Length: 103
Image (tube, one colour):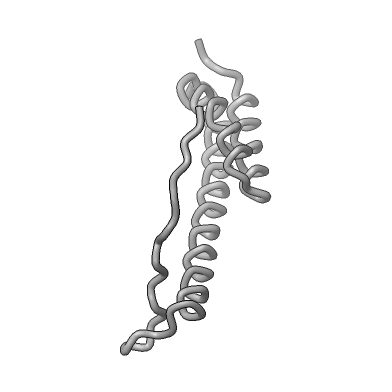
Protein backbone atom coordinates (compact mmCIF):
# COMPACT_ATOMS: atom_id res chain seq x y z
CA UNK A 1 0.00 0.00 0.00
CA UNK A 2 1.40 3.38 -1.04
CA UNK A 3 0.84 6.53 0.97
CA UNK A 4 -0.67 9.64 -0.43
CA UNK A 5 2.25 11.91 -1.48
CA UNK A 6 0.53 14.75 0.36
CA UNK A 7 0.88 12.77 3.59
CA UNK A 8 4.66 12.65 3.19
CA UNK A 9 4.78 16.36 2.35
CA UNK A 10 2.56 17.16 5.33
CA UNK A 11 4.78 15.08 7.64
CA UNK A 12 7.92 16.89 6.45
CA UNK A 13 6.16 20.26 6.73
CA UNK A 14 5.16 19.44 10.31
CA UNK A 15 8.78 18.59 11.16
CA UNK A 16 10.00 21.80 9.51
CA UNK A 17 7.52 23.82 11.57
CA UNK A 18 8.57 21.99 14.74
CA UNK A 19 12.22 22.82 14.04
CA UNK A 20 11.42 26.53 13.80
CA UNK A 21 10.28 26.56 17.45
CA UNK A 22 11.84 23.34 18.71
CA UNK A 23 10.95 21.45 21.80
CA UNK A 24 11.77 17.78 22.23
CA UNK A 25 8.05 16.99 22.41
CA UNK A 26 7.17 18.81 19.18
CA UNK A 27 9.94 17.08 17.25
CA UNK A 28 9.17 13.65 18.72
CA UNK A 29 5.51 14.09 17.77
CA UNK A 30 6.54 14.35 14.09
CA UNK A 31 8.62 11.17 13.96
CA UNK A 32 5.88 8.51 13.66
CA UNK A 33 4.31 10.30 10.69
CA UNK A 34 7.69 10.63 8.99
CA UNK A 35 8.50 6.96 9.50
CA UNK A 36 5.12 5.88 8.18
CA UNK A 37 5.35 8.19 5.16
CA UNK A 38 8.91 7.08 4.35
CA UNK A 39 7.99 3.40 4.61
CA UNK A 40 5.08 3.65 2.22
CA UNK A 41 6.03 6.33 -0.31
CA UNK A 42 5.82 5.30 -3.93
CA UNK A 43 7.90 6.27 -6.94
CA UNK A 44 4.92 6.84 -9.22
CA UNK A 45 5.27 10.63 -9.38
CA UNK A 46 8.85 11.85 -9.97
CA UNK A 47 7.90 15.53 -9.59
CA UNK A 48 6.36 14.81 -6.20
CA UNK A 49 9.47 12.92 -5.12
CA UNK A 50 11.66 15.82 -6.28
CA UNK A 51 9.55 18.27 -4.26
CA UNK A 52 9.78 15.98 -1.22
CA UNK A 53 13.57 15.81 -1.66
CA UNK A 54 13.72 19.62 -1.61
CA UNK A 55 11.58 19.78 1.52
CA UNK A 56 13.84 17.25 3.24
CA UNK A 57 16.89 19.32 2.21
CA UNK A 58 15.33 22.36 3.93
CA UNK A 59 14.75 20.29 7.09
CA UNK A 60 18.36 19.04 6.96
CA UNK A 61 19.63 22.61 6.61
CA UNK A 62 17.55 23.73 9.61
CA UNK A 63 19.02 20.92 11.72
CA UNK A 64 22.57 21.72 10.60
CA UNK A 65 22.16 25.43 11.31
CA UNK A 66 20.73 24.66 14.73
CA UNK A 67 23.71 22.43 15.48
CA UNK A 68 26.14 25.20 14.44
CA UNK A 69 24.30 27.69 16.62
CA UNK A 70 24.47 25.35 19.62
CA UNK A 71 28.19 24.76 19.10
CA UNK A 72 28.82 28.50 18.88
CA UNK A 73 26.85 29.14 22.05
CA UNK A 74 28.74 26.35 23.82
CA UNK A 75 32.04 27.96 22.77
CA UNK A 76 30.91 31.34 24.12
CA UNK A 77 29.71 29.76 27.34
CA UNK A 78 32.94 27.79 27.64
CA UNK A 79 34.97 30.97 27.28
CA UNK A 80 32.83 32.70 29.89
CA UNK A 81 32.89 29.81 32.37
CA UNK A 82 36.33 28.23 31.81
CA UNK A 83 38.34 31.02 30.20
CA UNK A 84 40.67 30.31 27.31
CA UNK A 85 43.24 27.60 26.71
CA UNK A 86 46.91 28.29 25.89
CA UNK A 87 46.06 27.98 22.19
CA UNK A 88 43.43 30.72 22.45
CA UNK A 89 40.45 28.40 22.17
CA UNK A 90 37.50 28.58 24.54
CA UNK A 91 37.85 26.27 27.50
CA UNK A 92 35.74 23.12 27.53
CA UNK A 93 32.55 23.05 29.52
CA UNK A 94 32.43 20.53 32.33
CA UNK A 95 29.53 18.19 31.68
CA UNK A 96 27.78 17.75 34.99
CA UNK A 97 24.25 16.77 35.66
CA UNK A 98 21.87 13.92 36.06
CA UNK A 99 19.72 11.87 33.78
CA UNK A 100 16.05 11.41 34.50
CA UNK A 101 14.06 8.75 32.66
CA UNK A 102 10.30 8.67 32.80
CA UNK A 103 7.90 6.22 31.32
